[in-house]
Length: 415
Ligand SMILES: *Cc1c(COP(=O)(O)O)cnc(C)c1O
Image (cartoon, rainbow, N blue to C red; front, side):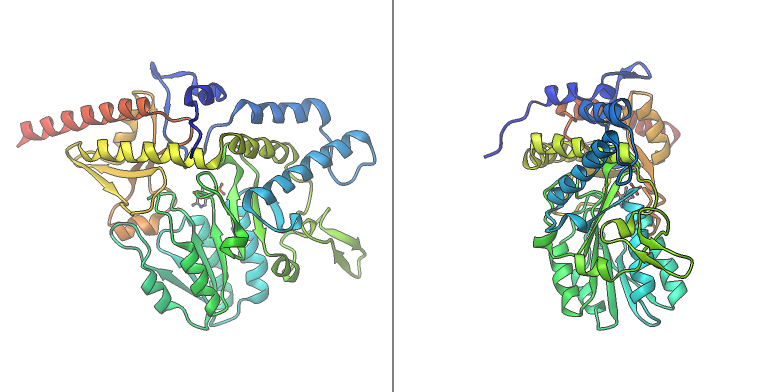
């Protein structure tokens, strides 16, 4: 049984939500791009810079020890958040993009050879396409694409047919940022294991919405961004299985990642520091712990339940508006709704909604190949978070209906 959560109380923890935009109360529906931050995250940032700003892992003084403890406490929190077995399996990165690049660069350059195949899906974010393209070009490896259906679901049979002993790496998005589709990653991982391929999950959109257990999933890598789970920008994490990370060469060279440096030879530090060259993003890392604690306090099941009821409510209301076409109608979805309105370009739709204080995203959502598959240049997209309400959806649906009415009348006049 789920606890009921008090959304109004949760909203009070997000100062940014309490404002008017263009003369209307802000309705923030762009959470898949970045989520807002609760007071405790803002206070943690402030508290770090005001109270104990110091470099980590080096100084012998009290503030440095305090900063190091807070920094490492976040690593332990992230370990628990993704269900990893060992704390040193958590590498801090700037976010999802850097984490994928780290794996493509380090694992890819060490272990991918000419003629090897790397598989991604047709619904990947550009950050899970480009690093693999670069690698394939450099190594003479081949990029294979898992096709997507018109509903926005992966074609698992096609995937299984594409798999062979040539497949060395499978990198797929856990939840699509453009369509909201939840992919059956268990099936993908099980099939990939059979041919000995390593699997990376892009968790940028799964981490905010449901519980992650990398051990139960048995993925080799899982990556996510702090700013999409109510935390700061500029901090994210890579989870990797210890034995694989240990076999991988460093990504960047510099301070922190070394054991000993001479001009003749450098030996590298142990995990996770081997992959964390230079002074890290300490303040944002410290505050990421508070973002995870915020999620834990509300409970991921409660978050998922609330968002899911909003998703169903919004989907039903939007389907009733004439001229609206939903893009991505997978059976298993999170609270992301991509749509088009007949006769109105998504970009103009975004501007008209913004004039009513409603923030949505328009464009290709960094998934241009997916848009090409659908034969469109982009969509309008609303994406929901725990602080969104039914009333906000009513406001949005009313604004959308008004726009639809206006444009269908204009069309009648013209014809
Ligand atoms: C946002 C996002 C990314 C990129 O994350 P950054 O924080 O910009 O590095 C990658 N994949 C998906 C599915 C995303 O939603």
